[in-house]
Image 1 (spheres, one colour):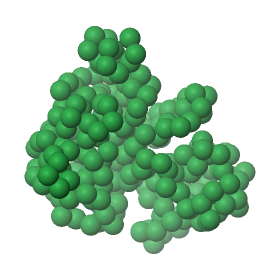
Image 2 (cartoon, helix red, strand yellow):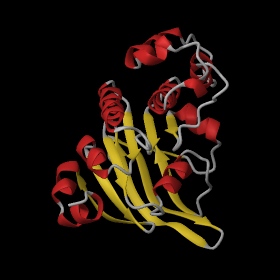
Image 3 (tube, helix red, strand yellow):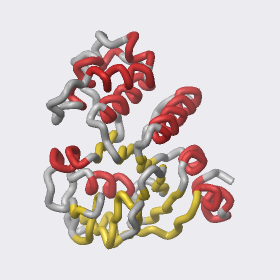
Length: 237
């Protein structure tokens, strides 16, 4: 395995009952990269992330993180290895305050988290202003920021994001992607699923196209942006 490869997925298969959602895919994420998986709804993107996070049991294949097999490990063990998922739909705790939500993100840590709280408040000043508000009173964009900030509290090496811009206004989407780049520049590797394929490809170093459970294309972001098939299918060209 290449020394820079942080995540290596080999022959991954995921079944739901008799339905094969992911059909033996191979891909990798190198340390320090932003990599995106693009594809239509039902292509297998979320199933892939949820399987890496330990939420879904695969029916075949390997998932290596830092050279270590993840399949069979608990979600807590996977988080403690350095992988965190920001799920689709944000999934914050609406009745808990912003601070309480952030502390839950650090639930596996036994050290002082104040430095990390300060770091996420620098990244998300609006969360600092609303730190004692209940999560459910925040706007959609602020809830997405809280979901990302909560994930960062576990100090991930790999941050996986499932549809971070879903349901957000274009201006907020730009903010979220600017923050994604900032998080990446601080040393966090990112694996991103995003319906806004144009924004995802422009942000990512590399991308993979999933179609009905199979990877049909891969390349640098610039290559995918100029690919006629990708333009026609995903970029509205």
